Length: 73
Image 1 (spheres, rainbow, N blue to C red):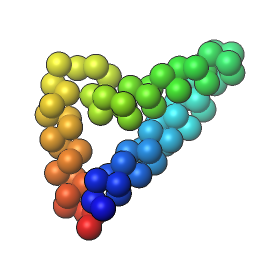
Image 2: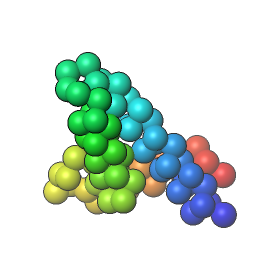
Image 3: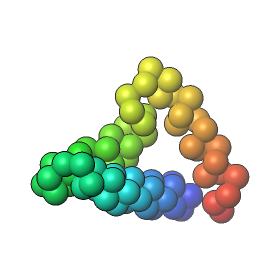
Image 4: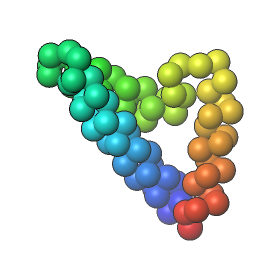
């Protein structure tokens, strides 16, 4: 059950990343490109949980998992 809740929160965070990114990028690039970039950033977060592709991805994942374990049932 906890794993499904973690996946749901990951989806919500990816949605927030996508929404924020499309809004911010939409201020400087055409809407189609902003949507593409926002989708890319959300996918990077959701599928790899390695934000921005740093070599410290395992540290990010451990931090996110600890955060979930602390605040989610």
